[in-house]
Length: 444
Image (cartoon, rainbow, N blue to C red):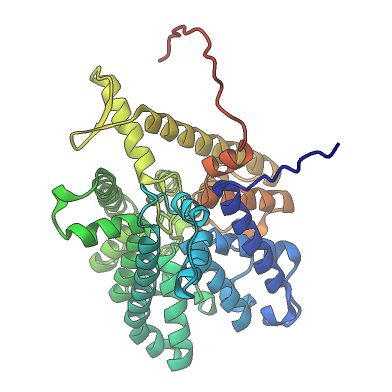
């Protein structure tokens, strides 16, 4: 008697995870090639894996300075990995299929929906085209705006390359830079007083961080705020608040010794970049512990759903705050802009928040013990990794192998998403048909 063969199809979540893993491994292999480094010796596998993971997960944490260690070929590989990671593996694959004229099946559409957090399956191909066009247009505009400064400083050839690299890195919220030729790991500190560079980079970060779905809504309804989806309203409101209040803090308490113009730019830039770009125009080691803790909080929050940014997302924090307010006011449901939010959304937000906090804090405690460094310093690095930010207090290149692999895991978790990993692992396990008896417990 022959047993019937059972064909098990991968879920959308499994496809997303395998896609990211595949690109990371391919990128790691390319970065180990002799041609990828300036000394033509090739990178160690661990260094290549860390860099490829950081690039695909659009984080920006590095073990080797991007400008001085990697060759033009290696930098090109990193830039491609950033672009793929920023747009998303599935988005890039579907975009290629759309451009080549291939038909997009239901499975591909469903996977795309999960990858970009789209509300509906319908219109996915149209949305993919919008994402592709928007990405190319914004990055091109950003590069053109950066060219006068970079070309004037480094010459035409290198200036154009620097402009393209930093435009893509900023829009994808990656935080990789090529300014190590000024001073290794210096990021954009050499341009802290150059207003045009600061404003352009910040604009790219914000545009990439609020999400493609938000921009599609804005394109459709123009400046009519009342017509926007609730999610768009929440994202724009929370993003504005998370820029304004940290800017005021940095201005009045951290950069008080700078000239007025540079003080404003530094304060605004350090408020924008933790969610989740990874560039910095000030020496972060000079911040007070309060300033570092504020940046840690911003890094954990991150950007918005369906964007190039990571983190637990602005909508997650908004839902949790609104849920808390509902409890304080003895209301049964959570509300935004006169719309009721499903309880499942609140539960999901609480789950995401718990996963991030547990992983971020436990990893920091382990690294602090292993490396004998202050806990707050370790928390800064783990928040940067799981929030896919890339800001650092300078300890990442000095970490041991175990700590490096912990950061790799956090970066992957932060970009792919904890729920995606859990849903992929739990696929095929159906919901229980029966329910246990209900009983109340006291909390708070």
